Image 1 (spheres, rainbow, N blue to C red):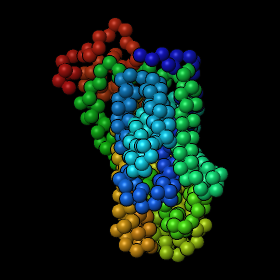
Image 2: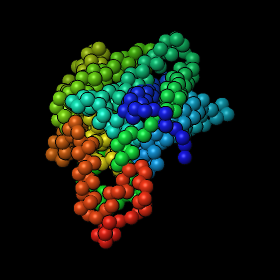
Image 3: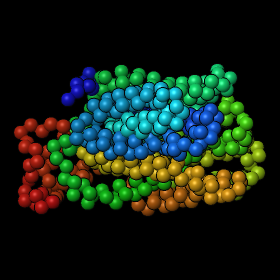
Length: 473
């Protein structure tokens, strides 16, 4: 339909070069809402706190992301990797701008509701980026030097999300400092509005993007034998999705509410620059976790790296919960330990769950497989951010309300490690090619005509089968 992506002669470099800005943009837009939420509390106080938007503005984007991941995951397999990315980028640009300009006849509650509505559509744009962007990057990484493929995938995906998270925390600090902690509307609108710049640049860069070679050779645009696919991948997909759900349940809640956690330590009278400044420090710990972890993933493999990361994170989390009463009295110490807790999450599941989702299925169904797993993860993020305040509230007093999230998160880390080690297969440097070959052989064994695989198969009628056995399937 669109004529995008026909200029480049190299299929690996364009997808990689564009992937970094994709995820940087998404990380920024996802994380900046935490600071926006804090600013709105400062600006409107009880009017905002008692509104429905206070409950939903931080997590409504996750609901939209689920929709985007499922819809665009399907389109990435059945239509085009590159054109799907272009459409999702346009959605991201339009609705991020609308969110920054939210207004309703000068009435605060109406404006809160408009912001919430636009954030839902922003989520759809974010969700559209993940299936097509990640699977395209995974397929392009197979053309890179063996022994480095996992790190490049991680550096262009999760590492850039984390850079976006850091900038999403830092920009509100800079804007708040420029406004001398006043002009609160300017602070949150500017912070949101800057998020338009990154996808706008990305849209221009993507005009020369080409389909990955793996997609060209092994796509299932003609027909998909869903029953065979389900029989082959259901258990693997269930396990990957569950680990992603458990990881996002905690990580996004801690990320979005970190500025609120810090403001709770400082008290309600702390200026925004103080809260946002320490929030930036905490978010910076994502970077060593993801950058070091990218290399560890090549050395140990993604399964063992993920299990190592969540196990260490659980240990630190249990320690934080046990000594919270003491460590919370020293903000620098708390920020460092909390930062280490976050960094270990990035070294483990943050880096590797997307890699596992992108490389544990065949090319023909990779977009839908990844989309379902990622959508399940975002459901975990939505549930986590929604129940996070209730987990805190269940603690009663200030100390226990802060301890409870760490107890819960650390327990889920142990469960994740067990699932990864027991239920998810090994992912090596040549997994994509090996998985495509195994799946092709599986289809042939069950009578499905593999001549239908690929972007274009001249002379083959769509929906054709080899023999009657395929019809039975």
